[in-house]
Amino acid sequence: MKAMELKVWVDGVQRIVCGVTEFTTCQEVVIALAQAIGRTGRYTLIEKWRDTERHLSPQEYPVVSLNKWGHYASDVQLILQRTGPSLSERPTSDGTTRVPERGFYRQSLPPFAKLRPFATDRSLRRKEPKRKSLTFSGGARGLREIFGRSKDPEAKQTQQRGVNLNLSRVLGGSGVSSAPVSPCRELSGLVQQQRDRLQVLENRLEGCEEELRDWEEAVAEGTQKENLEEELSLLEQQLRSTTVELEEEYLWEHEFQMEQETEQKLRVQLTELQSRVKECEAKLMEYLTHIQTLETSVEKERQQHEAELNQKINEEEAQLQLEKVRSELEVQNQNSSRLESSCRALESSLMQANRRIQEKEQELEQLTKELRQVNLQQFIQQTGTKVTVLPAQSAPRRMRSVSL
Image 1 (cartoon, one colour):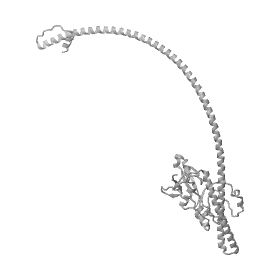
Image 2: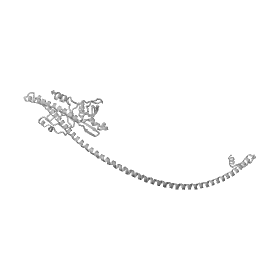
Image 3: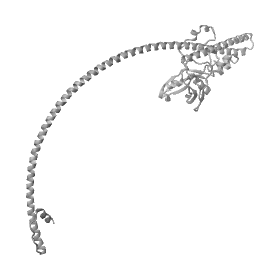
Image 4: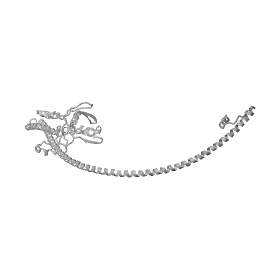
């Protein structure tokens, strides 16, 4: 699985968490950011899109959640919000300071008394505050300070477990992701780890109780009273912290049981839905077969109706064409008679025009003769020469001579 970078806004500043994969949880991202900024407290990771905000659970995968937004993923912002101080920063009712403890997400879990009836005998037991935010207050460093005298190797291995995420303001970095596993297996592994740690914590609790009894005997003897009171309060504080962690382990077990019950219910619902889907598919096939039969019968009726309609239309078209041809013949006959009458009128008009042309030619010849005579007389008068009169010429030559 290729590692990627995750951009998270912390106090108005954008920070980049490198080495994030699809199987990196919100709890790991919050721990890495809290370690980077060097502040303890209770934190929650918020997914914000426009005016919509959603609080992510500790075991939710932020990369998978962002991928669900599709092309809106670039508009989604991840914001780390500090919801309050850690339990180590808040004084208790007796004036002492609580040690760091881990947060828990579920608010619907039953109280610890219903899960562990035998634990009610302990006088130092307290209730776990319900919250949805993650608590980070130093992690393994605080445990080493409190249980520095413990020589249990399993406890040291448990304290060294953590998230190896690199945080930077610049791009770069890579991480190694684990192989994809089912949520049920992952939760089973987590429960097994919590059981191992529960055994370690119980051993440490027994050691603390023995040490507490020793100090109580020393206080009864009256030696080093002031120092013993401080040590006693410290041991009580350690005992409360251990009790809280034991409560959390049982809560995790209860959470696992609830998840298993939910999974069984979902499987039953899935089986019911699958049976319903099969029934719907069978009904759908019946309906499709019936629809195909109806479509076939409708198609046959439509083709028959179209054939009858086409035949009727062809007969009507033939009748209309016949009537149209007849009307065209009548029109042609009328046009031919009109053309004949117009031809006769044209011939008569041509004959009249020829007669008029002949009359005009005769008039033109007469005028030409007269014009020649007038021209000759003028020429004789002007020159005083003798002119011989030529014989008469055709009308076209006379016209040319007149034009000359």
